[in-house]
Length: 461
Image 1 (tube, rainbow, N blue to C red):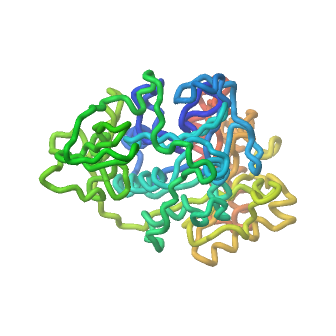
Image 2: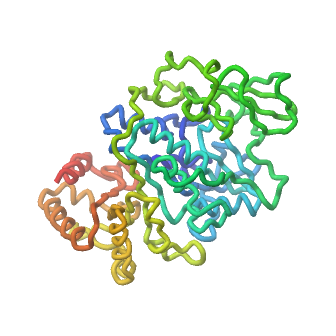
Image 3: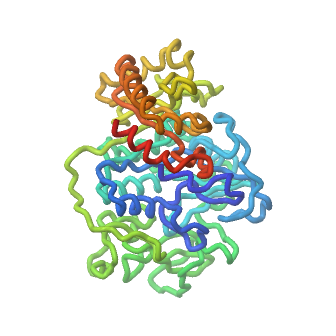
């Protein structure tokens, strides 16, 4: 779950899923790059690491609509989306509609350390677009991970509301990891109704380092600076690029280890950038040739790995049963799932019975009477693995999971019962999404230290 690093709980704006750290990030470890390398440094098997990507954005209501950059003070979550109806949360298709039809202004980091954010008035949202999802998918390949996962199927643009293609983010993952037919359309988000709304370039105030760090203003005879925001290949360094701003050329550095890819207008992996060899940086002296990392002291340096892949990448797609309860075009049912885009479908969620401490359906009417379990299980006939997830945020509130893992007879009874449950309904396996051992709903004062050891024992059993 390399997302939800920031949200309305912070009381200030922040990106939902930073790829790398930013100079003004209060918590430099809050980014996917650090998280992955930390797990690997602690012994995690790369083949078992599935890299999470959000199909949604965390949104905020600004305390001052004129202060709309990162780390700006907020009053909490932004207004609920028309379809998802959750304050502080917008599906990708809701975000792209706001940008295309409602004139939301988009801001992008030229160094591609985070995905875009967008705002209008006092409403603000950070999200991953197609370009960042592509970059993260390449990250999965470059680091020889087991694959990718998404939260969730119903939050991507599954009905092509925004006029690019259905499931643009999930299909991007599949094109990188599973040779899905492509290359596919370029789903670059821009305003359609209000062409005067700036895209890409946003003149932040000086304290926001997003666009102001490490830039050099130059005069260039080889570049005609006629169009503000236009990007150019640097004349002599693959790790730099130039942009035209107000009639002048500015030079920017890519994050260490990346080269500027003119075709995609972003900092990219060297093997994708196709930069002229005589201009390439000397990468031999870098601390790691594996992954671009920031110069923060707490970045984790890991060993270089081979790019060879012995087994297919996994793409885990979460299906949330409550998406069926939405009204209007946001309603999502098992019939809407494109099984060709997933190697695994994870059905969320089942619950833990408070008294008996055994698994039970979350919504008997949907799961059993309406036949959602049965409909999801049918994807097995197409070669898709179907997993049942239990837990989640709401189900993790009480002490019931702690009571389960800390009681030997209760654990044994749970294992026996859940095995029978999964076999009866036809699921391939189980995910236990207890959030979290000791830190119930992220409050580490609630649970005992023994939760962690007990949870490990339950998984072994």
